[in-house]
Image (cartoon, rainbow, N blue to C red; front, side, top):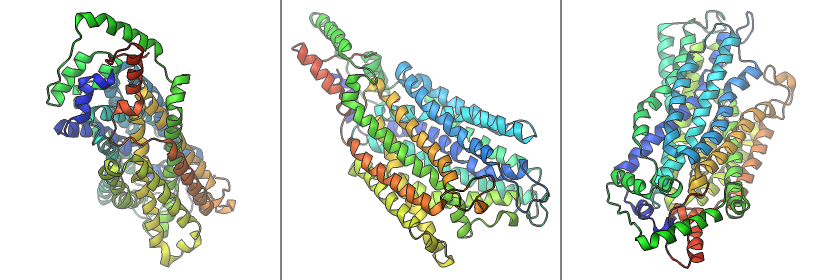
Length: 545
């Protein structure tokens, strides 16, 4: 089937053309929105604490209680995990295109609704904010398997890795844009509505208009997604889904001939051959295997274990790194003590610090991957990334007290930035790319969704497990409301070993550079087996339910 379909061969050898770049932009703007929406909440959580949890007479500004902070920051991750599983499965059942627009509209609606969270009491505002951010995450989750699968099935085998990685790299611009926009909004509001620092006048340090700042920042995330909705609806279904799963080779030929600006002739079997082809199709359908069947486990079980474990371990380290930002930014003076600023100034300082990290490490790391992934391969990049993340985690942890001294703090920031660089020029990109390439078309979206959901489970562990774990061993020095932990230094050591495990599990993941999707997924092998059993070298498109 796969090896003899001209449309799939045409896709594999097609020259890079304008439609490939259009597809990157259409799919990538979803990831731009994903990153903006997921990470912008960290820019405004301090502000939410000042507005809704102010305590008269307290020496420091109000902050979100631990359970509220966990809910506000983590509910979108929970929604993302659920969305990855659900839309990944739905993308294989209904087709990639049919559900692609649904995820985008869910993101648009819930981004706006998050900023419109109603009520004036803390409980009502936080409850509605968490409700809408869960469903925002649900839509974001769907974008992971669908965007990766669509891009992999459109691309040629020579530059497929770069195109999938470019879609994911739009996350970097989303994170950067969130910081830049927060800088602009906070600067404007601070100019229009002057306020004294908290230490001078606690009540006046948070002006009433500050309530608009966090709402505007959250709502603007809807704009880039809304701008690309029309173009997502105009995209045809991928040829691989249409031909291999929906069994409509004619439609696949017509769709791809339009977008790839090439003629793809549909070869119809002679009447004498048609009966034999139908019989072979039925036999191959009966021999097919489903997700988690014994045959699937034999062929792809190790691959799925590799993609899920590496993504899980990567996200533990990646999302827990944000926990140490406040210590690092405060140590180098990027974020002064909160009582020395008013509420809007604090938003500005946090946004500026995160934007600097994004500019020097996050964004460059993504695009190093785009440039090199089809040169040195996915396996090498992932191995390099995990290796240097391990090295830099231990380099931060072992002499931790040394880095905290005033003369050494800048090198602490450099090492911290390098861990982000090698996360993005490394497993943060490759764990997204590989699951879209190595599984059969009929379960490709589902398997990518499972792999991504495993990653988000790791993100939840990293974001919340280490939030408690990294607390000072002296309870009196721990953040308000938190029990004693093992300290930042010991947490960094644990994360070093997590990265080392990720490096070891990378050896379960195959290299897909320069190979067709059918070759990687084993679908060509299935075709050859079916053809041999019928003493015929030809194959036909089939669907395995």
